[in-house]
Length: 294
Image (cartoon, rainbow, N blue to C red; front, side, top):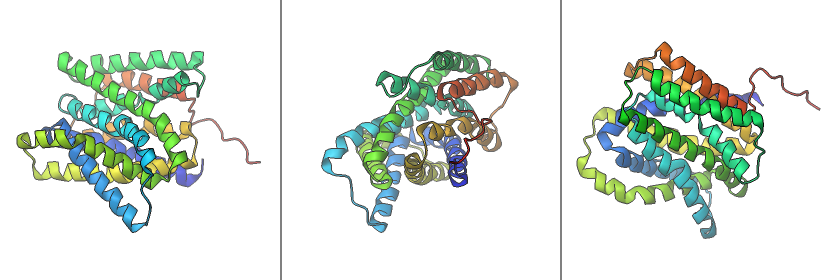
């Protein structure tokens, strides 16, 4: 992997890790659907302006149904689920549970015949779900029905991301990254427009919440989604997936630093198992030497 690609992965992980504390700030003020709708509207606006500035053409009409499905899997579903979970559990929990996305990505790829499901990967799947259970049971938050449901919501969001990554990789091969990213967020914004309107009367935004939603929409959604699609064109899918390993580190760190969320030793077994499971499933090994150049 080239140095610039590795640096981009680090930046992506740091910013995506920051999205979880930002969700914890904004979701109580805007509500799960309201925050998701505003985030997508801002992202669509930013990407649309970039499209105009860089003189890109929008995808053909025939491509929009598939891009709309990609929007549902990688934007609408995960945003709403993580927003709701952010009302219940610490951002560090959400960030760690998000690391299960590669598990579902590999399972989905195996289901459609794109990858083989080996014994190592099956072991990784088992360890991953045990890790999720340990994180919820041993972490600093008292376990009740809402906490369990929030953890399941995060896991469902990660599954949506993982399955959506298969379509995302295909989209990067069929379209330029910027038009595809813009179309995905326009489609997502249209889907969320009615829920956003219904949620509006109950919103109680603060200055901090507006700043958080601006960061989520303009940076971690719009701009970084485009960057991730560009990166996916240049490196392998497994290398791109490896950024999921670093997101929990940043998510837990940002949550502890800026929100004062507890980081306890009880979280370590679950976190370690989730990261080990993801490494087993994707075959990612940071200590493996790169093959010599031909």
